[in-house]
Image 1 (cartoon, one colour):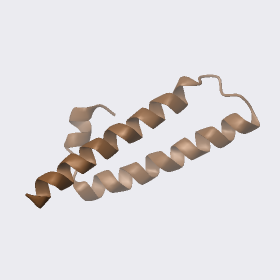
Image 2: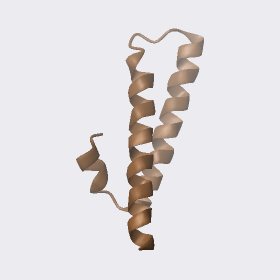
Image 3: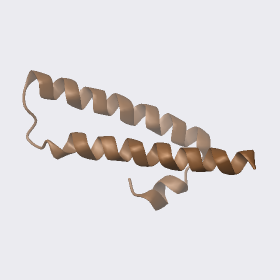
Length: 66
């Protein structure tokens, strides 16, 4: 997901989406441990997506605290 798409989500939806992405990342890692993935960049993309979502979530929560 791109940042503009993520910013459109509510805080609750974003939290749920982060948890889903973390599960997806764990599944990718487990599958890679069993048999090598064809596209290793999937793991990197998933990690970056999670980081992007966490950053935007913290920004949104900071705005709510003001």
